[in-house]
Structure formats: C-alpha cells, structure tokens
Amino acid sequence: MGQAGRYAALPGGDRVLPVIRSAQQLPGGRTAQFLAFDAAAVAERVPLRADLRDGRPMRDVFAAPAAAAPAPGGIPLPGQPRRIDLDIALRAPGDSGNPALGLLLRDRFGLTHRTPVVQLPPGDGTTVSVDLGTLTGAPFGSAAAPLSIAAIAVSYLPTGEGPVGGEVAVRRIAVSDRHDGPAVPVPAPAPGPDWTLNAPQLSRADRQPAGELLAAGVDDSAWVRLRYRGGADVPSGVHLTLMPPGTGQAVTEVPGVATRSYLAETGAAVGDLVTVTVGPTTVPVRIGAAVRSVPVAGEPALAVDLHSLGRLLAATGAREVPAPAEWWLPAASPDDPAPARAAAALRSGSGAQQVALREEVADRLLRDPLSAGPQAALAALAAVGALLAAIGFAAAGAAAGRERAREFGVLQALGASRRKLAGTAAAEGCLLVVLGSAVGAGLGAAIVHLVVPLLVLTPTGRRPVPGALVDLPTGATLLMVAAGAAAPLLSAVLASRGGGADPAARLRHVEEL
Image 1 (cartoon, rainbow, N blue to C red):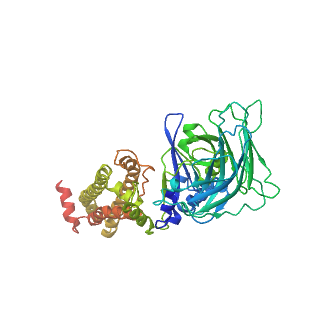
Image 2: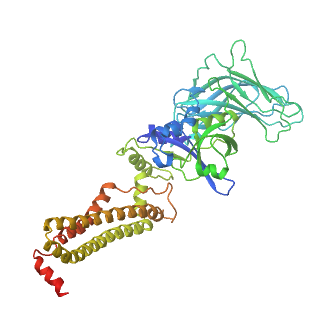
Image 3: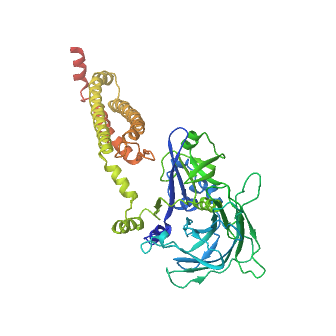
C-alpha cells in the first residue's frame, strides 16, 4: 500500500498507473498475461501502435472496461490516515465464533487493500484499532490519499459444538495520522441506500444466509448492525462482507479486452465469458473486444479494468487482494522529461526495484549486436546492390551505344536526323533504367519486409514483443533509387550520341566487316 504514495510523489506522479499482472495457464500449455489497470486512463494516455489495435482508436478498444468502471464510492476518510479506530459492540449469548474484523480500503488510484484482521472482544463499547503502518511500510511508504472504506469484512470460526451466533454493530469510525495520536471522527454516511451484505448460505438443506442486516436502531446509535449465525460445518470459517452505501450493487463479472492469440488458445470469442484465477479468487471476465496486442504485454494476454476488479474482490470479501506488480508513467509528449526524472529519482533512492525507461529499452535493442550485425549487413548489401546495378546499367548502355553506331550511320546516310536518332536512343535507355529501378525498388521493399522481422531479436535471441514493424522511409528510399539511376541515365544519354558525327567513317567500318 505504501508504493502508491511513494510513486505518486515522483515527477509526473499524478499520471502514474498501477498495474496488476499475473500469469494464467491456458489449456494448450502456453502462459497468458493477465493485466488489470485503469482502462480509461490507459485509453487516454498510453500509446499503442495502430497495427496492434487494427487501426481503431484506443477509446473504442477499451470502451467496455472503461464504461463498466464504478464511480467512486465507500466511506471517505479525511486526511492521511495512519490508524483507524472502530467503536464496536459485540453481543453473543452462546458461542461467538471468535469474530474478527478487517477493512478493504481503496486509494485514489483505485487499488483495493485489505487490512490485517483484528479480533473483536465481547462487550458493548469496545474500540479496536487498525494500524496502517504495516501496510504502507511507514515511514518510507505512504498511502495515496484520499482513502475510502470499500467494505467491512467480518469472519468467524466456530470452536464449540453448540449453536453459533451473535450481533456486531459498528457505532463510530475515527482516523488518526499518527500511530498513537488522537483520532478524528469520520462523518457517518448520509441517509440514503442501505448497506449491502454479502453472506454465503450455510447449507443446501438450511438455505439460510450466514448473516443478515438489522436496523441501525431508533436513535441511529450504530452505522450498521449485523447478525451472524451457524458455520459449524465450515472448516475454513465464514466470511461476511458489508458494502457501504453508495457502492452500488455487487458485480458478478468484469469486462475485458483479449488478444486474438488468447481467444485462439482458449477457444473463446468476443462476447464469451471466461474465468481467470486472481490469487485465490476466480474472476469471471466478459470479452468485450479483441486486438492483436495490449499495451506492455506479450501474446496471449487479457486485460481488465482495475476499478471493476477491485469492486468485485471487495464484494466477494476476498481474503487476499493482489498488489500491483508494476507502475506505468506515460509521457505527456515525446519531449516530456517527467519519466526520465522519475527514473533517476527511483534509481538514486533506497529499495530494490527494476526501472525500465522506454528510450533506454529502445536504445539497447538498437545497439544489441545480435540484431545490429545482420541489420548493418543488410544495409551494406543494399548499398552494394545499388552500386553494382548502376555499374551494370552503365556498361550495358555503353555497349548498346557502340552497337547502335553502325545502325545510326546507315540511317543518317538515308537521311535520318541525327537529333531524332539521339533522342530515340536516349528515350529507350531511360525507359529501361526507369523500369529496372522501379522493379528493383519494389523487390527490395518486399525483401526488406520479409527479412527484417527475422533479423530483429532481443538480447536473449527471441522475437521482440510486439514484433518489429518495418517502416521504409519513402524520401530516403526514393533518394537512393535516384542516386543509383543517375549513372545509368547519364550513360544512356551519352551513348545516344552515337560515338561520333562522321557517318562515312561508320559506313566504311561496316563495309570492311
């Protein structure tokens, strides 16, 4: 949890994006990448090559995940909380089941964090404290305020053979920015929608939920009251989740964007529902769009919205909430210095972490000898080929000029104009040069598109992800073709002069032959 505050304080930290990444085993044996990020922010800030998204705008690609993102909800906590105090009342006439309480907190990035559980002692006016220092790694880390309570989780594990049950009431919540300082009360939720309780059924025979909501009391002395019962036959304990007002209905699935290779491996299609394991929780994902690749991921891959995933995990009372595996800082423009400054600050700070800067990665790939050698050889081969073509054209033009000298002598003796003969020869030579240059340029471009993707490799000898995109610069290509055709064109023009102006000498040479 402390990573969020630390990275938010970096240069450009207001644009930083947390990303949850995990591996998913596919039926064919391959491993897919599962990513969860802010879909709306990625569509707005993260670039993706047009060929990887089929030319569609990023907003259209991530339209379904971004539209399903829930509005901010929960109980907002003021300031920079370090400790959360809850006034709890626990009433249990029999076996209480040793209930424990935990909070699911949501920071300003939409990340959901689960606090350590605290045991609830019996009594009518007990205060339990949740220390956030262990989650944030204080004083080095800090939470990304403002925080809000996304859910209150209550769990219990029966220890006896008698009936289990009790009532839990949350009367007051207060926060403090210090470990042992005074706490500031949190305003109670405004009157409106009731709290939402997610409780499992005790058994198929009973078909009764393990908990139910009670009235808050005639004097509104409690924010929420919960009655729980049963669970003696549940070895792992019973877990109940209280959703504050304003969080909306619990979601049952999240929309996602998949790569075509992911759909091919799983046999799914756009609109189908697939299940993904995120920690110990199974998440249903509805495929809303298919692309060739998703940002910063290999193939196959599946991406969902971080807010929707957090809402589903909070609704199901997940006992383990995944933490972000990486953080992205998109540049605002090609000249934005914020990513480089943030990378320098991270590298000079404390802690073990891996920092990847896009420009450094591109430079390392370009200078990698495994790819640089073949690419340099390909460029040298193109230059040598153009030079040899120019020499061949020039030699052929000179030879053709000598052969036409005899013909031009006969034609001139018959009254043909020397200027017209020269123009005809020059036009013929130039046509051959232009046709040869055009065909050579086309074949060269085709060979480049076929060969270059095979030569570009990572330092480990693998294909880069995404794959290399061949982009022939039109201006430089035309300039090279023109330079290669200059010598043959000049040779054709010179050869068209016929090698001399005396037709008698040329005719005498024909007679001697």
